[in-house]
Length: 85
Image 1 (tube, rainbow, N blue to C red):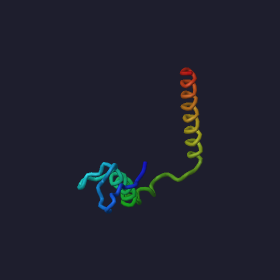
Image 2: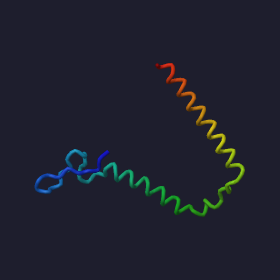
Image 3: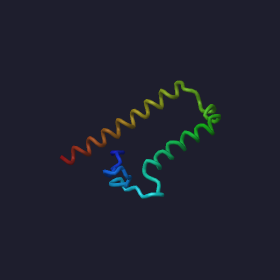
Image 4: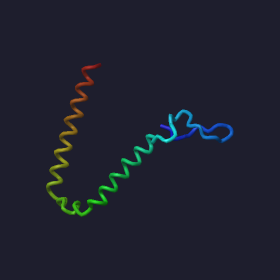
C-alpha cells in the first residue's frame, strides 16, 4: 500500500488514483480514529486495569494451553494442505 499522492505539474492537488473525494474521510482517517480510540479508552479506564490479576503460575498454564491450541491448529492446516497436493 502506498501513501503517495499524485500531484499534477502545476502542483495542484487532484486526488488522483487514491480515490479521495473532498469532504469525505479516507481509509487512513478511519484507521487513525480506531487506533486513537483504543488509547483513549485505556487512558479513561486505567484504574480498572489495576484490578486485573497479577502474573504468576496461572499465566504459565495459560501460555502452555495457548501453545497446545496453536500447535493443534497448525497440525490441522498441515494435514488439510496435504490432502490438496
